[in-house]
Length: 254
Length: 254
Image (tube, rainbow over all chains, first blue to last red; front, side, top):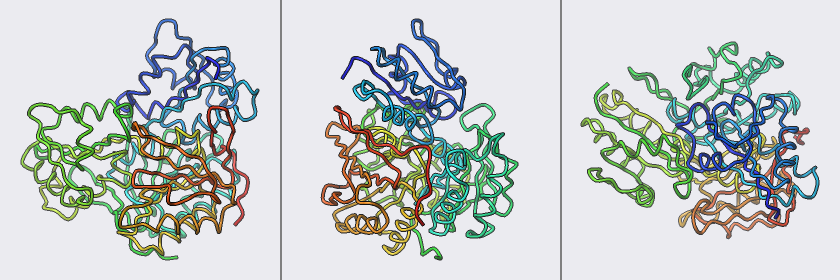
């Protein structure tokens, strides 16, 4: 081990209420913070701690810059929204270590988990992830659309609840609509669907609809979508519906 | 809304480092705590707050007791290890509300998310959940073994990484061995497998092996298992291997 240290820290979604004690301490201990600008803006400033914001799409160059900085003997933190291991910076850091100079393998690397978006959206809605589920990124930047459809088919037909990350972006306008169409081949029209947007932030919204009525245009980059299985239920209440997937499962149709 | 309030609180795995600020505040605010005894033992005592421990298998009666208590106007908390929405108490509370008296639907119910075991185990290992993944309970108490095998087939053949919850118990000794056998039909022998036991506790262990060498006897009730996809990689390091699933996926075989 060198004296260099790299922490990859999950901030959770939304505000500081979902920050863990470990993440708070790791942010405080860092000499330098790297991350997407809006995530860095969520971390309170501390004198003597440098900040290195970068653009959303620059994961590999950000990981490499943070590793090079740590290899100089600094305590460096890469901050990530949600959990760093779920469609976020931890995999990019591992990739950079594998393909980088040998010294990077000698660094002390810590991944600090966080509340990932699907847990926060599920908590707002009830317990839609209460039984077997999948998490799937709809981004076809780094995999083919055909593979995404194959995974949607497999997950829905086997009775998994499905959490959809990265449903839409300016460069990917049609993918969510196609995914919902695909899921309609496998699941009943009444299957509950949850659109959770900016959960934990001031402009949070959580909308419960059905697979038949779900409208891709209602999602943006800050939205996480949960599509129920054939078992997922909605409990009407005056204060808003509870959506949950029972702990017991009957046979799903093949 | 009545004045009654029920919070279902995720403690995260292991010690207090993974508790969120929201969970800490919700535990402090409760008049009464319900939960599995060892989880309650992790919450610091507060004068005036009553404790109602129950056995691990009594989810429905615990949920009903907590709801009945809240319906008397109290602030009641049900504590759960990990995240309450992932194979834990939130679904049981929703089930109890659906089948219970109408007054229970008028309660103010809050689900407080937590770090679920697969996020903590993944963080210790690197980023094995860095791409599409499933979470599957191996308990066949509330679903058939045939359905579990169908889901293992679907997940592995479509290239999902798989997190296995509830791999074994005294009453379910053979299920994990059968699941690993089933997965060997779909995945290469060298597929990385992680056994994460008691992560965050003093007796934590994280072992990285391969699907060929994975031994079901190495798991107990405190173990969470992550089985990689065909894409998951191991980066050897002097300080222990890093396991990650790259953000980019090539086509998985059908």
